[in-house]
Image 1 (tube, rainbow, N blue to C red):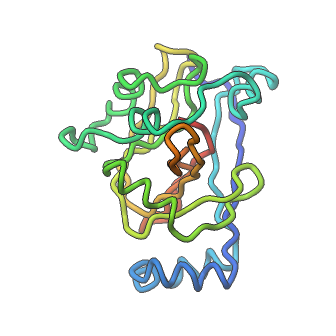
Image 2 (image 1 turned 90 degrees about the vertical axis):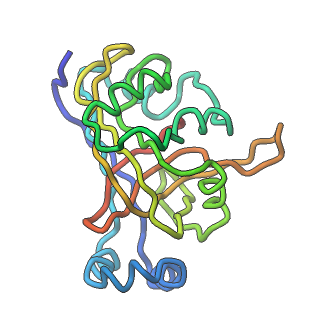
Length: 213
Protein backbone atom coordinates (compact mmCIF):
# COMPACT_ATOMS: atom_id res chain seq x y z
CA UNK A 1 0.00 0.00 0.00
CA UNK A 2 1.41 3.39 -0.98
CA UNK A 3 1.75 6.49 1.08
CA UNK A 4 -1.31 8.79 0.82
CA UNK A 5 -0.11 11.98 2.46
CA UNK A 6 2.85 13.31 4.34
CA UNK A 7 3.28 14.60 7.87
CA UNK A 8 6.50 16.10 9.19
CA UNK A 9 7.91 15.86 12.70
CA UNK A 10 11.13 17.64 13.61
CA UNK A 11 13.74 17.58 16.32
CA UNK A 12 16.09 20.51 16.86
CA UNK A 13 19.74 20.63 17.86
CA UNK A 14 20.43 24.14 19.21
CA UNK A 15 23.90 25.11 18.00
CA UNK A 16 24.86 27.70 20.65
CA UNK A 17 28.32 29.30 20.74
CA UNK A 18 29.30 27.16 23.74
CA UNK A 19 28.17 24.00 21.94
CA UNK A 20 30.07 25.04 18.82
CA UNK A 21 33.20 25.48 20.99
CA UNK A 22 32.63 22.01 22.44
CA UNK A 23 32.19 20.47 19.01
CA UNK A 24 35.37 22.17 17.87
CA UNK A 25 37.28 20.36 20.59
CA UNK A 26 35.83 16.96 19.67
CA UNK A 27 35.31 17.31 15.92
CA UNK A 28 38.23 19.40 14.72
CA UNK A 29 38.18 17.75 11.32
CA UNK A 30 34.61 18.90 10.76
CA UNK A 31 35.53 22.49 11.65
CA UNK A 32 38.38 22.46 9.13
CA UNK A 33 36.31 20.90 6.37
CA UNK A 34 33.03 22.73 6.77
CA UNK A 35 33.44 26.21 8.29
CA UNK A 36 30.62 27.74 6.25
CA UNK A 37 28.29 24.84 7.02
CA UNK A 38 28.93 25.16 10.75
CA UNK A 39 28.33 28.90 10.52
CA UNK A 40 24.97 28.08 8.98
CA UNK A 41 24.26 25.72 11.89
CA UNK A 42 25.16 28.48 14.35
CA UNK A 43 22.64 30.82 12.75
CA UNK A 44 19.86 28.26 12.27
CA UNK A 45 18.92 25.26 14.46
CA UNK A 46 19.64 21.85 12.98
CA UNK A 47 16.33 20.22 11.98
CA UNK A 48 15.92 16.46 11.60
CA UNK A 49 12.69 15.96 9.67
CA UNK A 50 10.66 12.80 9.20
CA UNK A 51 8.15 12.42 6.36
CA UNK A 52 5.54 9.96 7.56
CA UNK A 53 2.79 7.80 6.13
CA UNK A 54 -0.53 9.65 6.40
CA UNK A 55 -2.71 6.57 5.94
CA UNK A 56 -2.95 6.04 9.72
CA UNK A 57 -5.40 8.03 11.81
CA UNK A 58 -3.93 10.75 14.02
CA UNK A 59 -4.51 8.61 17.10
CA UNK A 60 -2.87 5.55 15.56
CA UNK A 61 0.02 7.63 14.27
CA UNK A 62 0.74 9.29 17.63
CA UNK A 63 0.55 5.98 19.47
CA UNK A 64 2.85 4.35 16.91
CA UNK A 65 5.43 7.12 16.64
CA UNK A 66 5.49 8.57 20.14
CA UNK A 67 5.33 5.28 22.00
CA UNK A 68 2.21 5.92 24.06
CA UNK A 69 1.18 2.31 23.47
CA UNK A 70 3.02 -0.78 24.75
CA UNK A 71 6.48 -1.30 23.23
CA UNK A 72 9.69 -3.15 23.88
CA UNK A 73 12.08 -1.26 26.12
CA UNK A 74 15.48 -0.62 24.58
CA UNK A 75 18.15 -3.05 25.79
CA UNK A 76 21.77 -3.74 24.92
CA UNK A 77 20.88 -6.91 23.03
CA UNK A 78 17.99 -5.30 21.17
CA UNK A 79 20.15 -2.37 20.05
CA UNK A 80 22.87 -4.75 18.86
CA UNK A 81 20.32 -6.83 16.95
CA UNK A 82 18.51 -3.90 15.33
CA UNK A 83 21.27 -1.37 14.65
CA UNK A 84 24.71 -3.02 14.40
CA UNK A 85 25.21 -4.60 10.97
CA UNK A 86 27.31 -7.26 9.29
CA UNK A 87 30.49 -5.67 7.86
CA UNK A 88 30.58 -8.21 5.03
CA UNK A 89 27.45 -7.06 3.19
CA UNK A 90 27.84 -4.13 0.72
CA UNK A 91 26.23 -0.99 2.14
CA UNK A 92 25.32 0.43 -1.28
CA UNK A 93 22.82 -2.34 -2.06
CA UNK A 94 19.49 -0.60 -2.93
CA UNK A 95 17.53 -3.48 -1.37
CA UNK A 96 19.53 -3.37 1.87
CA UNK A 97 16.87 -1.80 4.07
CA UNK A 98 13.85 -3.69 2.77
CA UNK A 99 15.67 -6.97 3.36
CA UNK A 100 17.39 -6.18 6.65
CA UNK A 101 14.36 -4.59 8.32
CA UNK A 102 12.51 -7.88 7.81
CA UNK A 103 15.48 -10.10 8.62
CA UNK A 104 16.29 -8.21 11.82
CA UNK A 105 12.61 -7.95 12.75
CA UNK A 106 12.67 -4.15 13.10
CA UNK A 107 9.11 -2.91 13.69
CA UNK A 108 6.94 -1.25 16.32
CA UNK A 109 4.09 -3.52 17.41
CA UNK A 110 4.29 -4.87 13.84
CA UNK A 111 3.77 -1.40 12.33
CA UNK A 112 6.43 -0.38 9.82
CA UNK A 113 9.17 1.77 11.35
CA UNK A 114 9.12 5.06 9.46
CA UNK A 115 12.87 5.61 9.50
CA UNK A 116 15.90 3.69 10.74
CA UNK A 117 19.70 3.68 10.76
CA UNK A 118 21.95 0.66 10.50
CA UNK A 119 25.49 1.38 11.75
CA UNK A 120 28.62 -0.41 10.59
CA UNK A 121 30.57 -0.26 13.83
CA UNK A 122 31.15 -2.41 16.87
CA UNK A 123 28.67 -2.17 19.70
CA UNK A 124 31.52 -1.15 22.00
CA UNK A 125 32.37 1.85 19.80
CA UNK A 126 28.75 3.00 19.76
CA UNK A 127 28.44 2.55 23.52
CA UNK A 128 31.46 4.84 24.03
CA UNK A 129 29.49 7.67 22.40
CA UNK A 130 27.30 7.72 25.54
CA UNK A 131 30.32 9.17 27.38
CA UNK A 132 31.02 11.90 24.80
CA UNK A 133 29.92 15.53 24.77
CA UNK A 134 26.16 15.82 25.12
CA UNK A 135 23.78 18.41 23.69
CA UNK A 136 20.11 19.23 23.51
CA UNK A 137 18.26 17.59 20.63
CA UNK A 138 14.97 19.36 21.30
CA UNK A 139 11.97 18.73 23.53
CA UNK A 140 10.96 15.43 21.90
CA UNK A 141 14.37 13.81 22.36
CA UNK A 142 16.07 15.72 25.17
CA UNK A 143 19.75 15.00 25.68
CA UNK A 144 21.68 13.29 22.89
CA UNK A 145 25.32 12.42 22.30
CA UNK A 146 27.50 12.69 19.19
CA UNK A 147 30.31 10.50 17.91
CA UNK A 148 33.85 11.91 17.73
CA UNK A 149 34.57 10.21 14.41
CA UNK A 150 32.65 9.39 11.26
CA UNK A 151 30.67 6.17 11.12
CA UNK A 152 29.41 4.34 8.03
CA UNK A 153 25.68 3.74 7.98
CA UNK A 154 22.66 2.82 5.91
CA UNK A 155 19.71 5.20 6.26
CA UNK A 156 16.30 3.61 5.69
CA UNK A 157 13.13 5.55 4.86
CA UNK A 158 9.73 3.92 4.46
CA UNK A 159 8.24 4.21 0.98
CA UNK A 160 5.20 1.91 1.23
CA UNK A 161 3.39 -0.36 3.64
CA UNK A 162 1.88 0.02 7.10
CA UNK A 163 2.45 -3.33 8.80
CA UNK A 164 5.00 -6.09 8.52
CA UNK A 165 5.85 -7.86 6.26
CA UNK A 166 4.70 -5.30 3.67
CA UNK A 167 7.21 -2.59 4.62
CA UNK A 168 9.39 -1.34 1.76
CA UNK A 169 12.27 1.13 2.17
CA UNK A 170 14.75 3.23 0.27
CA UNK A 171 18.38 2.60 1.25
CA UNK A 172 20.98 5.39 1.37
CA UNK A 173 24.64 4.92 2.23
CA UNK A 174 25.85 7.62 4.63
CA UNK A 175 29.10 8.41 6.43
CA UNK A 176 29.20 11.00 9.17
CA UNK A 177 28.88 11.90 12.84
CA UNK A 178 26.09 10.02 14.59
CA UNK A 179 23.65 11.46 17.16
CA UNK A 180 22.28 8.93 19.65
CA UNK A 181 20.32 8.81 22.88
CA UNK A 182 21.43 6.65 25.80
CA UNK A 183 19.83 5.14 28.90
CA UNK A 184 20.75 3.20 32.02
CA UNK A 185 19.96 -0.52 31.83
CA UNK A 186 19.56 -1.51 35.44
CA UNK A 187 19.78 -5.30 35.14
CA UNK A 188 23.27 -5.18 33.61
CA UNK A 189 24.32 -1.95 35.40
CA UNK A 190 25.47 -0.23 32.19
CA UNK A 191 24.75 2.91 30.20
CA UNK A 192 23.61 1.70 26.79
CA UNK A 193 22.85 3.34 23.42
CA UNK A 194 19.08 3.61 23.07
CA UNK A 195 18.33 5.03 19.62
CA UNK A 196 19.93 6.74 16.63
CA UNK A 197 18.32 10.15 16.13
CA UNK A 198 20.31 11.50 13.18
CA UNK A 199 23.62 12.00 11.38
CA UNK A 200 25.72 14.95 10.29
CA UNK A 201 27.51 14.26 7.00
CA UNK A 202 29.89 16.23 4.81
CA UNK A 203 26.95 17.20 2.59
CA UNK A 204 24.61 18.22 5.39
CA UNK A 205 22.24 16.71 7.91
CA UNK A 206 20.48 13.38 7.53
CA UNK A 207 16.98 13.47 9.01
CA UNK A 208 15.65 11.07 11.55
CA UNK A 209 13.05 10.83 14.24
CA UNK A 210 13.50 9.41 17.73
CA UNK A 211 12.37 5.85 18.09
CA UNK A 212 13.42 2.92 20.20
CA UNK A 213 15.05 0.20 18.19
